[in-house]
Amino acid sequence: MSLFGAMNTAISGLTAQSTAFGNISDNVANSQTTGFKRTDTAFIDYLTSSSAAANNPGAVVARPDYMNTVQGTLAQTDNPLGLAIAGQGFFSVSEATSASGGVTTFSPQGYFTRAGDFTMNKSGYLVNSAGDYLNGWNVNSSTGVVDRTATAPIQVTQTVYNPVATSEVTLSANLPATPAASTPVSPQVDVYDSLGTSHQVTLDWTQTSANNWSVSVNVPDDVNTAARGTATVQFGATASGNPVPDGTVGSVGGGTGSVTTGAYAAGTPATLSFTADFGNGPQAITLNLGNYGQSDGVTQYAGSTFTLRGINQNGVPPGSFSSVSTTQAGDIQVNYDNGQSRTVARVPLVTFNNPDALQRQNGQAFTATQASGDPLSQDAGTNGAGKLVTNEIEQSNVDIASEFSKLIVAQRAYSANTKMVTTADDMLQQTLDMKR
Image 1 (cartoon, rainbow, N blue to C red):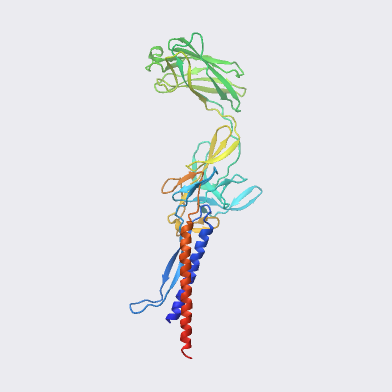
Image 2: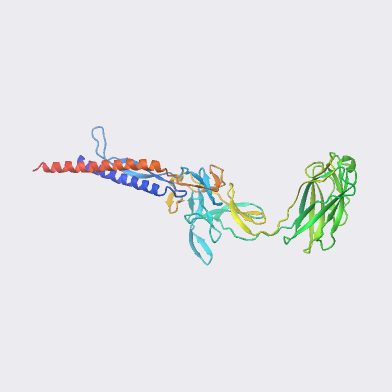
């Protein structure tokens, strides 16, 4: 009977609009939730029977329409570990199952999220506001090689940065072509021994004749003797006998004491080496004067004063943990108070063939389904994955104004369906009263 059919159709409309109202309510409630993805409502018509001669009332069913691929607004944050994804992809995260005795265990289930408001907890793990642990690829701190075979929760250990003994000193300067008589030029550089203790090395340069210089290496802290030896450095083709431009290093030789030198080879580094002992055994140090025939290191051009352009060495003193930071490549770096940093992990982005088919979980997280496809972990900015943005987080993709518009429409549709129910009821009552 059409009256009953109309009532059933109107009741299905009430149910569908109630579902839409629930989705709108959920969206509005999470309008400020980091990384939240809204759910719209799709209405589907179900027929009972329909032909050219007759059409019987059917029903309407509400189905969720997930907006997992719609980008939320990126907002700047003071959190140095805050990460946002500009484009497609998700962070891989894990959920902890227990944390007893200082050991945290994790669920084998893979979770994925866009909530990148990560901070470091007391155990050194990077955790977002929902309590999910950020996963990453391990990085070999010595070689910098990224292990992309597996992801694991990123844990930062607040260890010290071991000292590195100096093995190379690089000098960039201009020796005056007409220096003051009997006045050596003496640049100094601090070097480090194997324990990270700083020591001073003095390089005394004295011009012995035109385009010829003698450099004396002095190490006051050496346990043997401060004077480590000397070498002769010649500039230009005339003095050195090698085809180099005037004013550039043409040869390094005549090493004495612990100082040794190498032969000339065009375009190769001009170096001399010496050995120092700071009480921890012999320590070999190489002094790099730049390339033969080039002006990238030590030169001898016009002037009467020494000009130091730069002097540095590769040693490092011991360092204590200072902070943790992220890069746009997804590298998690541990910073130390000695100015050094170490990369401990890299954050991959996970993409899916159909991200709107992911299964929603608590805490703005998702799990993979058969319809979503398998997760694919890859570097940020490659193979369709979005870019990582540091010091920013992705806000909810809910638009309050749009949700209120949907709310008004749902309210009007719900009221219209209630009117249909009451009208059908009145008509049924009138039909029953016809027997009286």
